[in-house]
Amino acid sequence: MLSNAILAVGGLAALSSAHVLISTPIPFSVPALHNGPLAADGSDFPCQNTGGGYQVGSTNVMALGSTQPLNFIGTAVHGGGSCQISITYDTAPNKNSVWKVIHSIEGGCPAKNTPGNLGNDPNFKVPFDYSFPLPTDIPAGNATIAWTWLNKIGNREYYMNCAPVQLTGAGGPKSNWEALPDMLKANIGNGCTTKEGFDYKYPNPGKSVESFATGQLIFPDGNCGPSGPSGGTPDSGNGGGAPAPAPGGGSGAPSGGAGSGGGYGGSPAPSAAPPSPSKGGAPGGGGVFITVSTPASGPQETAAPQAPPAAPAPPAAAPPAAAPPTAPSAPSSGGGFAPGTACSPEGQWNCIGGTSFQRCASGTWSAVMAVSAGTTCKVGASSAMEIDAVSSKKRRVALPFRG
Image (tube, rainbow, N blue to C red):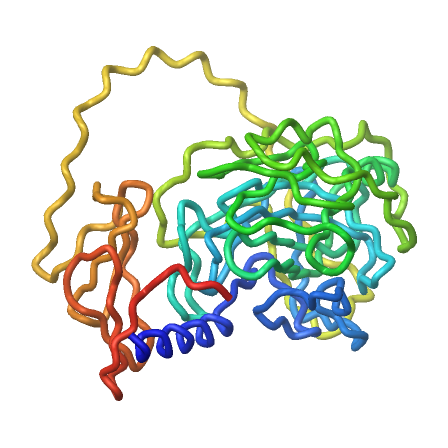
């Protein structure tokens, strides 16, 4: 029992180096992202910056009105949680920068239907792909995009990764950007906190919102900013935080052409039931990446104009009667199940040959993933996958670790 406890602590230490980072959009090269949360006192807000400036390795060129991919690496997904995508027109954001929300994901971010973590590999591609729409009528120009995350399980933390972007297209006036909601900040000593074990509903998520929540949605506690008309009512919880003054300062946005305020170039992605884990795939349309060593002074590559949206399809015919439930598939000769085939019970692990594994999530088997170097798993399907260190042969049991 004692050795298992010691090994569990070792597993927590390993997970601390496997927290999630954004891989798309491409983040700043300086500050070099660490894959942990912001400091609890907010000293490295925003963007994990401690005063050393910013350096652009790759600028993400995005067309206003397009839909952009959002992908992650790492395995310490902390049961998911809620995420926001926000924009500032400060290209070197500081503590006074104003961040405006363009997309909110309430529950199931950065992992859907995942009760704990996915392992301890910092380079593992998270098998859930997300996207976010860019408004059509905010100003074009250079800006910074932030991904922020309120984790569901583990310590009460706030994650923030930032990426440089060039927004192309006609755009709209500064007032359209100013009318967007303020980015929510929590767990960094600002009087706004979250309770462990819940998915979080944003007081003012904006017009573009998705939800992949599998449990209760609650508002954060405390001084969390004003509520908006799109905030809605949580399934359960504390009733929301008290209003706070809107943040000030920052250089704001450049002025642009006419616009209607908060317009998006198409409907937001539907809030469908969580899909089974995928193996990834090509990023969504509209995104181009260019590599630069210093801020460009000359013309930059812009995205091609988008084709007009297709006319709406006629109403679909009534669906046929549902087919009988598919029985769980039998394992292949190698001991694995074909990804995407039916499985039960939910959450079951399957170790294949001691060197790789997969999991039953959302009723289907995930893609096969390798175990960490220097370890082996106990072959077969079980509710708690057993891991041995190759060198010491001491057993470690996979649990939804905190950290």
